Structures are given as C-alpha cells and as structure tokens.
Image (cartoon, rainbow, N blue to C red; front, side, top):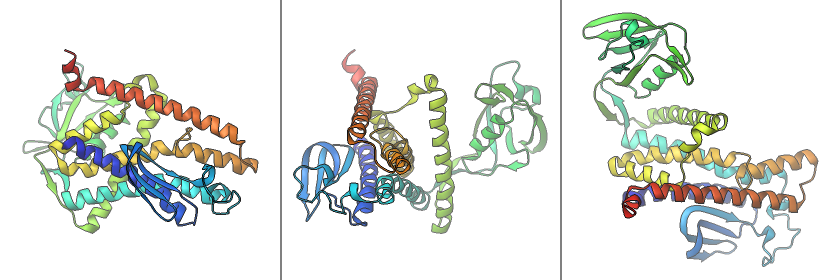
Length: 360
C-alpha cells in the first residue's frame, strides 16, 4: 500500500501539472482535443463535447493534446482559437501554466502539512553538539567545544526549536571559512561564549561536529494564519535549496550525477515515507512538485522551457523557426529524455533489494 500511496502522489502532481495547461487553454477559448493522465494503452476514456479525457496504463506522465496538428480534426487551419494561431503571450501562458500550477499546489501542500498534520520541532531551543569528529586537529576541540553542548546563538543569531535551525547554523559555518564565529553555548547550567574559526573545505567551512535537535522531536499543529506563513517560509526554503541543487549538478556534474533520482527511486523514497510517517506525504508531494516545476521550466527540448525558448526566438525574429527545425529539435530532445528515463528506471530497479535477491 505504501508503494501505491507514493505512485498516487506522483499521479496527482502530474494531474495538477496537466490541469494547469488545460485550464489556461480553455479559459482563453483555445481548442483542446485530448487530456490524458499517463501514457500507453487507454484504461478508461470519456469523450466530451470537444475533449477526450483518458486514463492510461502508465501513470508517471501525462499530456494535453491540441488539434493544431491532428490530421483528423475538422477545425479549419485558420481558426483563431487554435493554439498556433494565438499571440505569443497567450501561448506562453498555456505553456507555463503547468509549472505555475505545480508551484501553487506545492505551497498549499506545505500549508496542509503544517495545519492538518503539524510541523516537527524540538522541545528545547538551540542546536545540540551530538559528537565531535575524531581528528586531533579538530577546530571545535581546539575552541573548547564538547559533546553535549547546546549552541544557543552564532554571531548573534539565536536558535529556537525549529528543526531548520540546524541548517541555519550549518550555513553560518559554511559561509565563514577562515573567519571567527562567536558562539553562545549552554553546558549544563553554565552559559559560555566561545570563538571558533571554521576550517576551509571544498564544500565550505567546517568545524568537525555532528549536529542534532535539542531535546525530543514533537509535532505541533498551527492555526491557518500561522500555517500560511510557515508554508510560505518552507516553500521559499525548498525552492532555494532546489535551485542550489540544480546549480551544483551543472557545475559539479561528475560528482553529483550519481545522485540524480528517476521514477523508481522517487517511488521507493515515497513508499518509505508512507510506511513510516504517512503525514509526511504532504511534504514529499510538495518537494517533488517543486522539483517537477523547475525541471519543466529548464530550456531543454521536449520540456515546457524548451517550448518557451522557441516562443522567445519567435518574438525576437518576428516569425517562428521552420516547423522541420522545431520538430527535429523536439524529437531529439524527447528521445534523449526517454533514453535517460529508461536508463534510470533500469538502473534503480536493479538496485532494489527484492530484485537483487532474485539474482543471488
């Protein structure tokens, strides 16, 4: 059931994305002849007055179809409500609407997480020093930091009970390599003030400590107004982290390429979350929805960003690129994406525990 829950979350996110395209088109009076959740053989379909709605066998995808290039369509080629005959702005709205829908949906998932399930937090303020790295030259040891110390503030930034305080402290350490950081520490009943200078590492500053929340982890449900604010803050944090992750993937491709996850790995992660903590599926869905939006807006062929790039070129040239050029680029991009998808599916499936047991 946990695997089905993870697949259901992905299917909902894809549905939201395609609904964004569909609603943006229909609200402008643009013809839409197909709306499909999934790919492959049709399991169920309904023919509306203009649009065919279908559910297909493989739910990890979907599409909105337009009659512009449908040879069986009886709509005249010069119909002003065909997508290709609309102004660039109208088409850009339709193309970008899926990304916008995913971002909006992610925000409301985070609000639901906080309001309905609750937000995890520590029972005590500060960040706990759980352990020290074993190196003799550890800068934390030299500064007088001990396991069990609680960092209450760093460079006058106080740490509360939020689990995000750990990331906040890590960011201060990372961005202050070679510079002294003033720490306010609680050691039992004592309050101490220490200075520590992070050691410069390739990934940023480091002081050689393991960090953990202070006290027990509990959940607190927020009222709607607070949930809206907390959801916005978490949305901004995830969005920033996701952009940083893509930047790192591009700048350090050789080191980070192995961390790219495909559909099988995503479902595996979602299934683990559903099995251990069903309430966190809201957060899982928001995380994947934001990643789905950012991936789709990249200016790559066969993605929404690629189509927006074609519109930008059309706006600059005053006319679209030749159809054969666009089709060639889109088909090449689609084949590359399908190839990458198949590679990741095969690779990640082979790494599943139950699959490995079959070949032992």
